[in-house]
Length: 385
Ligand SMILES: *Cc1c(COP(=O)(O)O)cnc(C)c1O
Image 1 (cartoon, rainbow, N blue to C red):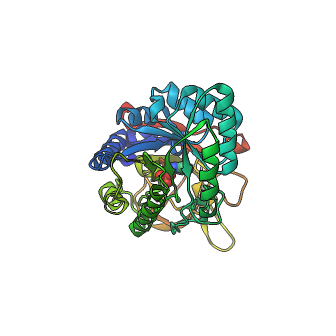
Image 2: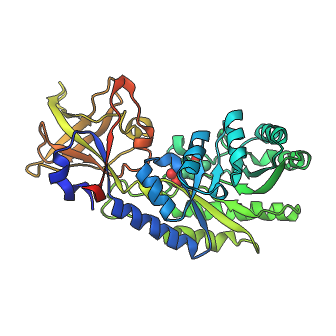
Image 3: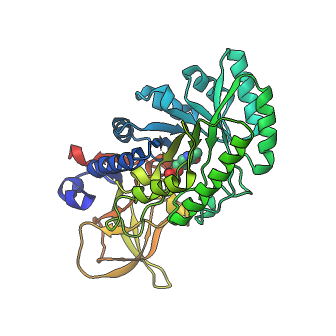
């Protein structure tokens, strides 16, 4: 149940903090697992979206693997009981130390993003007397029609290996004796709401995998990345994404070969809706242009998505229900971009009111910082109240 159902308990707590609806989290994880296992697909949770230990624990119980983008994430997965065979490691900038650590743990696969990275992993594996399992991250040049900062699969993007480089990658794999290619990896972007994009994408991957097959290269695994979007406008209308349709699109268009497995790396769609950022109104003020501003005690250091991507989180007043005003909601940080919303229609809001920023479970706490020497926000779980 959303934070609104726990106002009595929450009102006593120091703000700001993240509230997690653990029941919704578990329902979402189960729904995603059910929908994916219908086709034998495996989900790796994108740890970067939220590394809260309670969430990681719920993900492990749900039987998912881990998608990591740093050595510390690999370490967190290992230390939280994820089997090495369930851990993949992606990222354009893996350092030697991170590669050494992950090789030492014998993780399932490195998702490699450049020819140069293949050479470096090969060299380190050789030095350690290991064979590195790798997947080539191919940039499929599919436009995910989302914010340019969260687009990763278009041609002019720092991520992945481009079509022009695939031949060279295959040629170098033949020479790099300490690498074993286990599959292909893709990830075209995030917050993708247009299911048509996944259809285009899965058809594109079908073509790419056929091309590899014709070259006689066996691909045991296809990793389709993440990116399924959620309903930020109205989280109550769609508390859980449509995982059934999502996986069904891949099932219909990917047409996998005998013995091939398909992996997904979902982050946002699994955890965004279970989290809310709870904050308290501090001050009312008005600009000379007549804009009514409410300053709250949470800021871009707690939730940077609005400042970074222009993202909109639904804002509600949990403790006032009378009247109606349009407000700009701003935080305490010394940056003009520290604004959560403009023209936000709320009940009359005054000092002491509790506000919630909905759909904040993904890329919220995970991106929190101590800029301005702010404290990091706390975490409160519905099943502990
Ligand atoms: C961030 C990321 C994901 C998760 O993306 P979501 O939009 O949160 O599902 C998956 N795979 C890779 C490689 C990523 O970088």
